[in-house]
Length: 217
Image 1 (spheres, one colour):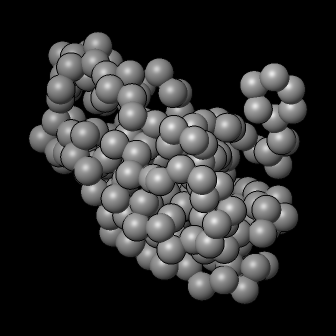
Image 2: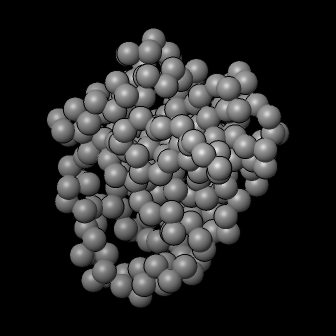
């Protein structure tokens, strides 16, 4: 699935929220509504100054406060109004939510190991990664469809949700999504529209994307 006609030259900037206390504690947040730390706010402010230079045309964000607060730093600079969408929330992970990494390994070790092997697992009885992509990717594509030719959409969301969305938009089989790697707090990935659909231009970036020059542009 990429759902994108060729030739419009649009760009997606998929931006993870800033740091939270649960990030520092390696505690699984999921859909729990955790605020940014002071460091997280500063991260968002710095990143927003960089991303504003890309002159985005629209901003959409998860409705959880860590994503809303991150997006607000960008909209304050750009004057854009963010659209908040529950479809962009982090993966719901049921009984895993609120547990540290060590507690998950202790209580749900077999389930965790199976997930890491690429098996289909409802972590903590929650959502499958494919179900997250089923809700998030269409929300991103719907917003992208409203962009002008050559326009840029900033999507402010969560690490797991962004990885599954990137995987879906690139047309990768779900068992390969883990290969994309994670996004650091307030870093982003960039997808550009090519002749055959979306392609990954930047991943886990923290500086402004540079144009590709040379034989493979």
